Image 1 (cartoon, rainbow, N blue to C red):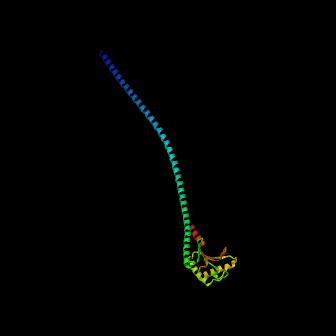
Image 2: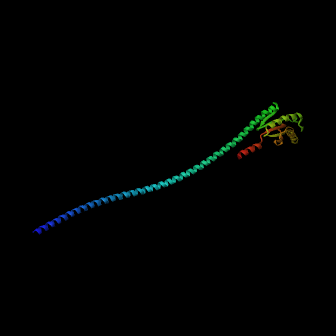
Image 3: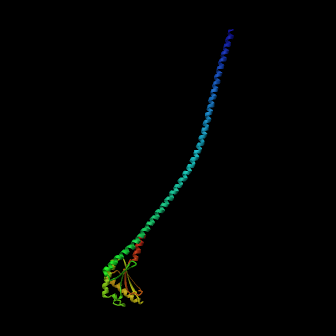
Length: 255
């Protein structure tokens, strides 16, 4: 009887312990299942987040690529603009330099003409002082023109020898000519009869007197004869040196 009771007690105890362990196992399984579901939910959420981040990264990369291309194009355009601007600046600077050079050249020519005109006025004043108020003096094309008759110079219209009174007059004329050594001296014979051989001899006589007796440089003197158009006599022109003017302008332009 005791054995039977003890066996029943052991069997009941075993059943109770087994039932308790099974319950605990079921609870642990439920807990694990819950944790697994939570882990799966977290994993799914992380996967969605990773997918979204990947999409954002792809979008950003595409945008960055577009920005890089746009920046490269902008930089290229800026370089092109800078090059064009540099060329334009260089062109403008060259144009301004050329314009300044031309202005200086023009100023040089204008100043030279002004200087010649000023010199002509000074020489005209000195000529009147030297030759007297009654002297036939004038200005033509920047040249001082000193006129005298054939009778005063040679004693008659057909004379070819300079008279004593005329020689004294030529002394004063030579003084005026030598006041402006950079100017040309042109001795011009005016004829109304057509006898140019005679006029040429008269012009040569005046030139020889100025050179031999009064120290006027021969290389400065040029002679000419022409129809006087109802006027006759000798004109002595003190004119700007066209050759000297040309040489000055040429040298200035070359510089």
